[in-house]
Image 1 (cartoon, rainbow, N blue to C red):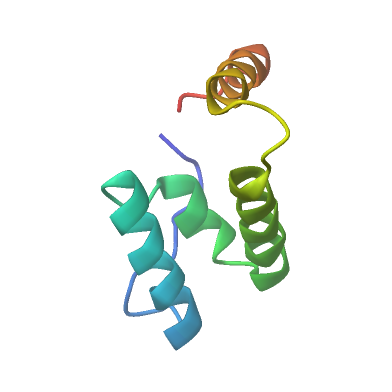
Image 2: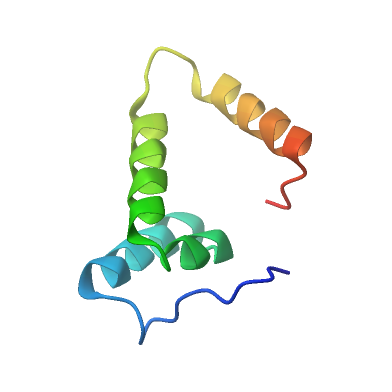
Length: 80
């Protein structure tokens, strides 16, 4: 459970709500880290840019990208 409260749909701007909709469509629900990052627009845009680049990278097979994501998450103690 996060120590910070994430931005709700009512508090979010129009663009942030659109990002929430895309995330919900992709992941099934809006991840809590995205709601927390929405509190700071710079952090949210940086994370969205990274995710967009990561998703469009074609030089590495998707299975290897998934494995690298899991390894990095386990090294930093991420719950996702």
